[in-house]
Length: 529
Image (cartoon, rainbow, N blue to C red; front, top):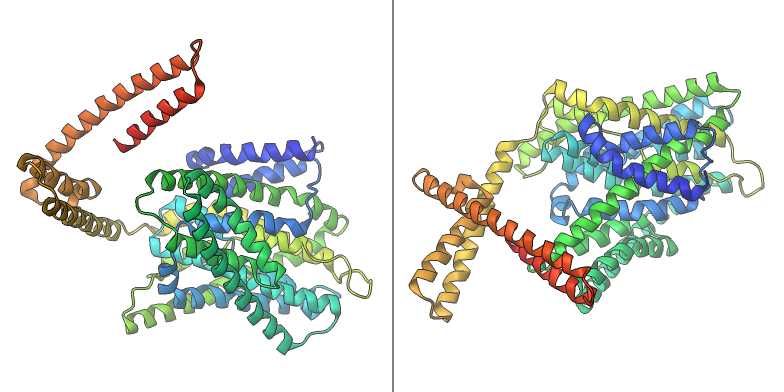
C-alpha cells in the first residue's frame, strides 16, 4: 500500500465512521483514531510521510472555519469572560504544571523544551470536543464553552509553543521579547483576519454565483492562515477572525440555495478532513513505537505521570473556576453561558480531549538546535505528547457518553423550545408587517389578503406549534395536515416529472445541458415546496 492508497482508505473511513459512530453511540473522531491505530499495527501499511510543517496549514484552517460556522461573534463576545476564566487561562496553568513535572522527571530536558511540551499538550481539540458534545445532547451553554475553549486555546498554546521552541533552539530567552512577539502575533492576526474578511466579502458580492462563492470560502481560510504566518502572526487567530467576520457580514438572507449548498459543502469538508486528521493521529503511532523501542517501561511511566498531571490540573482548575464564574454571573446578572452545576463541570473536565494541533506541534519539534546538537529529549517529548493524546482522546472519548448518562446531564429542552417559540412569533410578525406594506402599495383581492395573512401566521406556527393558542390549535393542526397531504402528493408529482426528464436524457438527440437545466428547475421547485 502506498501513501495515496492510504489517503483514500482514510477518506472512505471518514465517511463510514459517521453512521457507525451513530449506531454505536460513539464519536466518529475517536473511531477514526482507533482505526488509524489498527492500520499502524498492520505490516503492509506504510509510515505516514507528511512533513510536520504542512500538517497545521493543511488541516487546521478548514476545521476551524467549519467550527466557526456553528457559532457567531456575538456569542463569543458575550462569553469572553467565562471562556477566558474556564478555558484560556487553563492553557497557561497546564503548561506551567507539565513543564515543572516533565523538567523534574525527564533527564536532560531544559526548561524551554519543558515549556514547549506543556504548551503542545495543553489545548483541548475543538473538533473532537464539538463532535463528542454535539452527539451527546449536552446543554447548549456547555457546548458553547467547549467550542470557545478549543478555538481560543489553540491560539494561545501555539504561540506559547513557538516562543518556547525558539528559546530551546537558540539557547537564550528574553521575557520582553517573548511578550512583544505575543502582542505582535495577535495584532498581525487581527489585521490579516479583518482585512481578508472584508476583501472576501467584497469579492463575493462581485462573483454573485453561489458555486464561485463557495469555492472562495474554501480558499479563504488557507490564505488567511498562510498570510498571517508569513507576517509573523497567529494563523489560527487570523482564520477565526476571518471566519467570524464572514459569518457576521457576508450572509444574504435571501440567498437560500447558496446557504443550503454552502452548508452541505462545509459539512462534507468537515467530515472528510476530520476523519483524515484523526486517522493520522492513530497512524503516527508508527513513529512513537520506534521512539520507545527498548525503553518501554521508562517511557510508559513518564507518559502516565504527565497524563495524570494534564487530567488532574484540568479538574483542579475547573471546579473553583466554574464556582467563581457562577458567582460573578449572578452578581452581574449577565446572560453568559457557564456550567450551572458540578455535574456539568465534571462533564466539561472529561471533555478535554487533545487532538490535531497537539499532534502537529509534537511532530514539528526540531531535530537539532542552532549549534548543531540534537534537540534535547526530543524522543521523550514525542512519546509523552502521544501518550496524552491517545489517553485523552480514546479513553475519555469512549467513556464520555457513559459519564454523561450516569450524571444525567441533558440539554435544556425547555429553554430551546422557548427560544423557538419567541423566534416563531417574531417570524410571523415580520411576515405580517411586510404584508401590510404590500397591501398599501398594491390593490389585492380580499380573499387573497385573507389567505396571505393566514400563511404569515402559519410560517411561525410551523416553526413552533407552541405559539398557537388552544382555541386555534385544532384548526391549525387540520390545516397543517392538509398542507402536508398537498406537499406529499406534489412531491410525488414532481418525482414523476424528474424521472421523465432523466429518461429523456438518454434518448437520441437529447441535449444533456438542456435536460439538466430543466432538472435543476424541478429540483428548485421541490426545495421551495
